[in-house]
Amino acid sequence: MERHGFGQTHEVTNQAPPLANYNLFASDAALSAAVYRDGASWHREALLRHGAALTTPDTLALAELANRHSPELVTHSPRGERIDALEFHPAWHELLALLRREGLHALPFSDPRSGAMAARCAGYFMHAQIESGSLCPLTMTFASIPVLQREPALFDTLREPLYTREHDPRDVPLTQKRSAMIGMGMTEKQGGSDVRSNQTRAHALDGAGGRGAAYWLIGHKWFFSAPQCDAHLVLARTDTHEGLSCFFVPRFAPDGSKNAVQIQRLKDKLGNRSNASSEVEFLDAYGVMIGDEGRGVPTIIEMASYTRLDCVIGSAALMRAALVQAIHHARHRSAFGRHLAEQPLMRNVLADLSLESEAATVLFMRLARAFEESADAFPASSAERAWRRIVTPAAKYWVCKRALEFTGEAMEVWGGNGYVETGPMARFYREAPVNSIWEGSGNVMCLDVLRAMEREPQAAQALFAAWQDIARAHPALGAALTRLAATLNGPAAQREASARRIAQQIVLIAQATLLAQHAPADVADAFIATRLADGCGESGRVYGTLPATFDHAAIVERAFPA
Image (cartoon, rainbow, N blue to C red):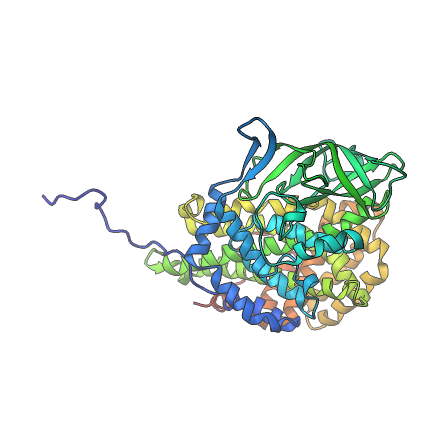
């Protein structure tokens, strides 16, 4: 009888090799075309270089290590002093250094040229396919810049550390650091999304206080994102105004001591494990008012509009990452005598996922253009204003929701291998819910869509007129626009109850018009037929239900060329 040595009972076969050393930019036809279309071709070489660097085995290992070794809170020094230090695995800092080297924390502000927003969003999208947690402090830093720019005296001290492409991990006062990261703290235990219920108080150090004045803050924040940041923007009430004001709260006080922002604990989260989120109390913490007194919500909402765009991009990136992994697996895994990718039903699933992914990609890149064209330096048209103000919250609602179902379907392509933590699929799936919750849950986003349409009817009309021009060549798209208009013209109470349906239809129509303009006919026609035709796209659907008349193999090949 033949004897076998330890671990040699069988030969390992029919397992897909790890996916590595491919170019995230070059392999993505939809992204590459959008970068060119939106005036960012000057950044193409940097994106190609970045797209290749992100998929090396070394970079992929950084993502896995940063998520396996979650940050830890060290509240006291060995001598018993309160220090509230955050300890991260070195992989975390290497990922942040990579992000900053690419300028993804500030590019449209530090280098405000045409297409800079598209360039930045494309790079952000690629990084988010590899690791999501490191994007949290980066996106808040990015979003804080237009808010801080409105405070010239303060911004003069922050411009260089905000714009630099160097990552400085040291936990020291801002005056000693080469680079800075900015976080935000809005929600409290009793209110959540209803920030107007916040109870944190701010007392002027001396004099009348007001914009630019120093305050002591007393209170708490229930979700305080990235507490290791060098400063946070927070909301609090003053003694002289019941409205919320916005404050710049540094990690260190002006005298060099640790500011009195005491970290109570780190959140034990489902996903986003590489990043630290916390609960804090302000024990007479030092802060400086930014914006006008009582206008804190509008001040910080500008920051939130940028972070909402990044939520859309982050969810689109999870879709793309999961799709590419699913296609790669299906091309290497055989069952019942054929590779999975050659089996008609599996091709249907992969093609349907490919449509959803491309639609999300063209949408966030179109939003990036709207953000650039509606910035202060540019006169924004009504349609561009509508894309930013109306479509962005709708996209934040819909794309983030779709990422949950999408990552689950892609995980199923892998079978049991997808459900274990030794591969990337489980991490993608755990990561998917956060963007739907953070910066406004689904209902908040959908109600914001209605509010924006009511406040800016001319922008909404301009947007619908542009869509109607495109819809003339696509009867199903035109009919969907007619149905949406009928819903919007109904009673106000019915509109609020239908807010999710309205937001969903706005996004699907936006995606359909973009695909009709910029994607191959097979892709656009399949998307419109299965998302907007009668009986489709109204109540959700399962992936893999494309009509057999479409060329599923061609759609998959476009998504990720073999």
